[in-house]
Length: 114
Length: 115
Image (cartoon, rainbow over all chains, first blue to last red):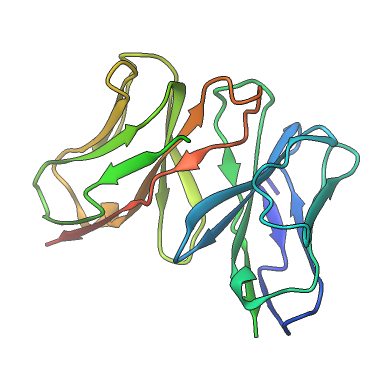
């Protein structure tokens, strides 16, 4: 497809389980971003990739959160031992490398931890 | 720490009226983004403003940037119901370790346009 693709679109998991969220950026976009959106916290930056490297991991809220990107394309955000406060929409975005380019967001993965 | 403040947070307008949403930010930046979000949907890019004095227009929406005042505005002209959505501004702090990714978002302005 032409846009940023995320899966799953919805995920309900039990507290303590691990979850993986996947993002497939727009073809040719070398920059990839993960954000989290929740009612209480608004939109929060999590991590940024340039190619396969992550020069900015400053937004990851704890060591339960990790992300990787392989082949300069698909990225996976992993949350280990999920907690209820992890419930949120996880948004992936991508852009061309140059600063100032439009950043395109995917539809998000809605995570509910019960 | 960069802070981004939008106001108002809630805006109820009548069709045909004009209004402005304000976005103030607390540190130096030369990149400001405006997004629209419909309920249950993702963020749709509206404008990217890259320099002082930049003005961009699309339909009934016009965005401007004053980097000296650290202020961006989103002006709505002759509002129509289809513009009802939440509008976010986001700022990229200059020189943040070279990162391009750490956009700081405002809390959003929920716009409701009534007939």
